[in-house]
Image 1 (cartoon, one colour):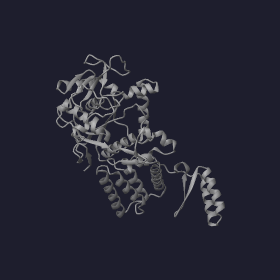
Image 2 (cartoon, one colour):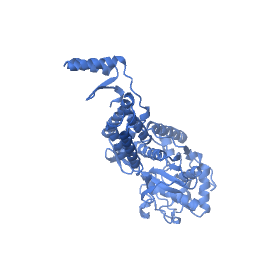
Image 3 (cartoon, one colour):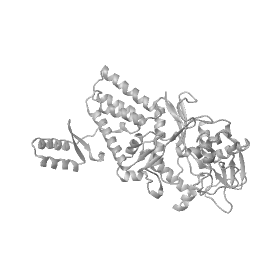
Image 4 (cartoon, rainbow, N blue to C red):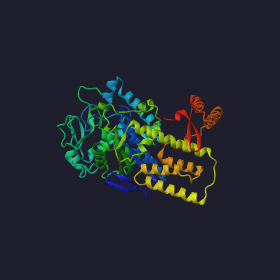
Length: 470
């Protein structure tokens, strides 16, 4: 019984796919006009966790993810500068070059975080035909009207337009930061197709049936591409909580206008990430990218571990101290895996098998309860500390749990300690037993210079590679 919170119904629901054993999932992708920051990273890691849990439960997942490379304006409600065109002008590149550059960076960042690649990646600029056809379909159904700057959607034609956000209509009005279009019939109406302003030559514009060149509105691309690849009945739609009041509310309205019914069954939204207790803001200079993580010598998977420590529906606070703690925890976990590989493999007794089954059941119950990763991590750490589970079974269970966590534990290899280092560690122990701590310290430094670190434990000295220590 896998349950996740549905933003539309405001309650946890059992995942019941339209087609047995198969889940069609659409993910709102990046607008590729700028760097991929920490907030984006958290959103897509949590989406990846959702997909992994679905697959852990035996579902086959078809994940479709868009790349917004045209149509997203700074105002979100159809006014203001085009994000792609503005970024191109600032960088003195073409809009196409900007899109290609930041799309490449985005997927490289996702790879570093061990986020699975979508089944299908679809770019807005490659689906203009589908978007125009969808606008014409809504036009035929009587949901649109024309103004001097584009084709607009009449939101009063959708009875439960604000159902997804749950916000009163007056709260969904255009923001005061951008100019309001006086030709709009209702404050919440939005553009489906924008006309290129007179006297302006855009880098990205296309011919349209409305006798003017133009470009698609931001919201139309997701409706067009999700239905092209997943049909007009979609199991799950994912995105950040910032998408709820405008983008996803409008997308849902378009779906209903085109098909006559709500297309998406379950809406999954990830909560915001704070940085040092504050909202991310360019003025505060707290927009960190993957480069910042690597420049501080952190493994990107430490960041993934940090994201696992918070529930996706709760705001998470990023600090460099919390990332360091996550890095230490991840290294301890990797060391457990290495030790499980080095110890002699033994069979499991009946009591051990019962305990293993209990761990599996607890883990499954937590991940299936709205992706409760913090509790699932707690089960994993209890397993790590359990001396009554054999190393072989511990390794097998950790590998199984990592199908969900995605921390790359199966790729952790046993460290092969050079013979010279082993002899030095033995020599250091002899110095320590003889009370010659100065000699022991000298040997420790020599081992460190060779790229290894000695850690003293109750069980005796343990040797680790220096680069694995934060």
